[in-house]
Image: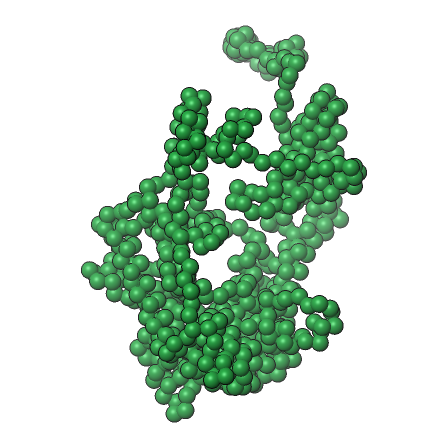
Length: 605
């Protein structure tokens, strides 16, 4: 190796002499400098030993003299790795370019084939023993699926049995030093009697120091009111969803609204983009009907499906610069979303026979730059205010006899099933829907927007646009009860004033199809019908929401930024937070704010 390196260097020096042949003095000077530098240089490799361990990637590890090979990370999506989707050109466009001898890299099939080739290399290097490992759970305890290579090995070697390995919980049966990390953290957190001697070991001193350096901010960390005022101003311009983040964890709100940290947007079809795609289709559907002077109840379900299909196809080609046409997978996702909207609109129009409300306004924004409605301002006292902005997906109106009053229902479109949790309502984690309705009831001049002098809140509901379809015993059973199954899939979930049930569902039935309720013989909701509330109780719900906003607004201006995420059962606020790497919360040591369970009794008015 030494000889090869210096032969190449000598050849390089000869080329330098030729390049400077016209200037012999300068050439000699360059050669002298290079030789002086090379004189102190050496090259070589670590000499092989009897017990040598080599660590490397599969594509660069092809030593045929290995006695034992450990292949790590055989989990779904890791090895074999999922091919990355190009953000600039779609697969169809790359295939078309390849027909004209323009190759821009391997396609998905080639990448998958390369991963299988890497798997072959990894599993054929050992001369004596091969060990394949995978993880059963990730760091957050979520289950992980095995790699497809595992099933392939079981087919090739049916007698092989998978061995399970777990770290010792107490540390006393540990065989390796690394197995003591978890017991060490538990010993510092819980002050376990049996592990006091373990913590004091001199060999673990470096680990103790490292754990202390990774400690997060103190739980009682606060800003001074003066600094909070400089950060937010006298009027905090925010949204209800941001205040929900504060209720989940004050530090999350501080990083998001105070420091304005955000993740880089990626050009890909995620849950947010799918929701926006369906929102825009429904908004254009409503706009077309309104432009024709037609209400939802005046159109047939068949024609509504056709309109949604036409609008969806046009929107698919233009949405986010053709995001849904980048590849076949995204195109299929768009077609699935459009079909779900067809079912939803058809079901909604069928419900119009029993529903006195009409969709009046969609995508109503307030507090924005070009909004027709101003921001919703709440006075906090001491010269501070909250100015809320937002977008309401849909407002349904039922004008009462006389035309001076109208009932209002807010409908919020979601991409998955969601409902209002009593504990989240109590602690301010779910406020957006009732807060929007509280904003509408505070409008100074509702006649300008809704044509009535007084607006009466009647209900708030989530709707799963993709449908929450269950399973049936047989295909015939599902097809026979298609209408009932579809209505159950798109049933609204939320809260409503039970005294207005005659306008929400005028069938006079004992249970709801569009809304969730069950009645007793005396026509009162039973205890399990938590969506139905008494008139006073529903009004108190809206009042409590405003009190939550005032309380949190005052805490924000007082400088509260503590790391205090909630925990409800196994659900933690950190699971939905993008700033865990900033707060550096340690789930082993942190004491989460536990939302205690409370029973929800029958409705009383």
